[in-house]
Amino acid sequence: MDFNLTDEQELLLESLDEWLDRTVTEQKIQEWYAAHGIPDEVSKSFLDAGFGMMGLPEEVGGVPFDMMTKVTFIEEMGRKTCAALPLTNNVLGAYLAVHFGNEDQQKMVFDEYLSNGKSCVSLATSEPEAGSDSANMSTVVTETSDGLVLNGQKTWVTDALEASFMLVVAKDEDPSRENRNISMWLIPRETEGVSINPLHKIGSQVQSLCEVYLDNVHLDESNLFGVRGSGFKQLMHTFETDRLSVSAQCLGLAQGALEDAAKYAGQRVTFGKPIYKHQMIQEKLADMEIKCRNMRNMLYRTAWERDNGKSIALSGPLTKRYCAMTSLEVCNEAMQIFGGIGYTTESRTGRAYLDCRAASYGAGTNEIMAYIAGKQIVGLYS
Image (cartoon, rainbow, N blue to C red):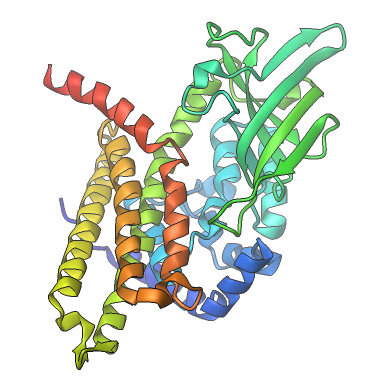
């Protein structure tokens, strides 16, 4: 495996760095986190720069790329900003529409996305009693005398306040645990019967996270997204790539925190010498470097496997689990090297630490990643 970047990848990252230097300054990031959102003009600028169409097919005006390019791009976003910015995730709705939506749904989603570059589809999957345990989902679509009706509650819905459309995962007819027939339904956010209650996170402050209540929401077949009864398979297709995106974000945040801490260690003087000359600081820096290299090795190898048609049923959850846990360790040690200032907003490491913490939940918890990997490992060695 050769993980050297191609000339095209190098040019892409150079273009991204130039855009970030011009558009995403540290002062602006702090303002966006305080305001709990990114200005519309920034999302539109990201789209107009060509980054917002990356990974989409050419027939819809996209710029196809492989998984290796995607993870290095997301990694660089995290490294340069030490922030979990949603810009790379804004294209998710368009990606889902291309793969599973009908022609009318694709046009509806793309028209919205191309108008502003913002996240246009929020994915409503988890429920208060059904996160990792998806079989316990109780949100249901039933056939009544008035047509199809959707009822239930969703939680941890990212971008529910910003996105114009919501993609709801619900059971068909029967909400019982035994029913495994699940479908996806695309509905406008302002549909009657949909109410949204924002939750308050400790990190990732530029995206909303919400509870969604669905009370007798009337649907018709035009709302069906993909194939009836295939919602779980469609969801797993999304999660497989989403887990690598989360891993890349973790790596970028950790790498940025390491670089900041190393620079500070060369400048800060205690007991008459720079702190990097103290053995305990050297040990921290060495272990942080090892962890970042290991994260990168795992992530790049898994991306390479995906690009070469190999199964990532095992390496995917292993990578996501390791990066979610290890990035938090690196950011924590970076804060420690900074000392008291690491616990303030004067240092970016605290923000990176809080943003990394969300990765232990999103796209599958650390525990469910071990559950998935454990079953794969038994099959591998049996």
